[in-house]
Length: 131
Image (cartoon, rainbow, N blue to C red; front, side):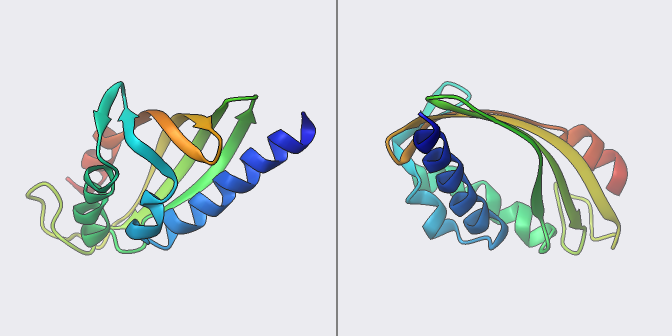
């Protein structure tokens, strides 16, 4: 059991590197096809496409794990997410402000793929910080 949990931890660690490198092609290799995001089945490339405008506006966007809990099929995470507003975001021109938000995510893992993701990010706080 411990080795299974370590495999899941290692899988997620590799995925987080791809996320923080903004390597969208590599990120898709971790997703089942389709992957369910907040219960909606989506193509892997559709999922990563949502990050393109985000990292265009915040080129140093970075997820830092605060807390991680792993069981046999799930990874539960609490993140601190940071970035600098250097590009337009949702109609707001760059402010140069550094932002920090909280994010909570649960992944369901099957083998070496994420099959489901439930995610809640505090984008209201992000909008307040750049507004």
